[in-house]
Length: 294
Ligand SMILES: Nc1ncnc2c1ncn2[C@@H]1O[C@H](COP(=O)(O)OP(=O)(O)OP(=O)(O)O)[C@@H](O)[C@H]1O
Image (cartoon, rainbow, N blue to C red):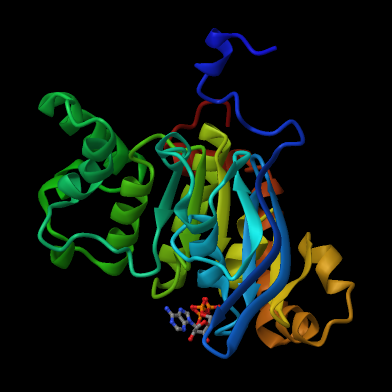
């Protein structure tokens, strides 16, 4: 039997099988339009799960259902073992996840720091202002923004900086799980790759579980452990890219084996080769400016 003390261990409620998000028999409809039917999905603790699918297949609606913002017509959804259907989850569970919405969804009249502070104030209304400022600065820097951006307003930031500010807000309450809706959309390839690296680094450092909706094939190859494919109103397949490519589903074949899919695979292979290649002593000298040991 659990003791009172055990109930107070914050991370105690991850189900034993390590499944952080469990969706069963999900159905969503808007009037006559059926978006999801019999949709099942498991997201495991510590993984980066990519969610892909053609435009309008219901990726955002799936995310909104999981976080309790969309009332499904049928089905069961659990996050950390708790029912989230229709927003039924407790505040304790809700604060264990953070969300980066597609457009960043920053409050335009608040500075970056104030945006990050919103969820903290919501859950800890009595928090001391100085501590609040320190936490916000820490999250802003952890998201790869310079500390000076704290006082800027969203309209003063580039698209990439807005995404990072949104990420800082998603990380405000030290979540164990983050939801990212198209985080690299609208970023140039270098900015997108940097954002991918940041997500992977944060997952590795903080042990986050990451649910990421993306159209970006480079993101899938670079950081996703598994990919779930939405088609025909459900998750038709979930697995590593290698496993998916072996399936003969027409959309999956077109997506991964089309010209863009192959280009992304080639560039992922090149990046891996580069990272494996050790620096020669001459290269090391050039980089460090030191001729020690050369
Ligand atoms: N609030 C709503 N009212 C009516 N229809 C909606 C609503 N939200 C979503 N839909 C419809 O549900 C379907 C799925 O939308 P969703 O935004 O989840 O697609 P998506 O896969 O995220 O698409 P994209 O890749 O283009 O962002 C679309 O046909 C959309 O028009």
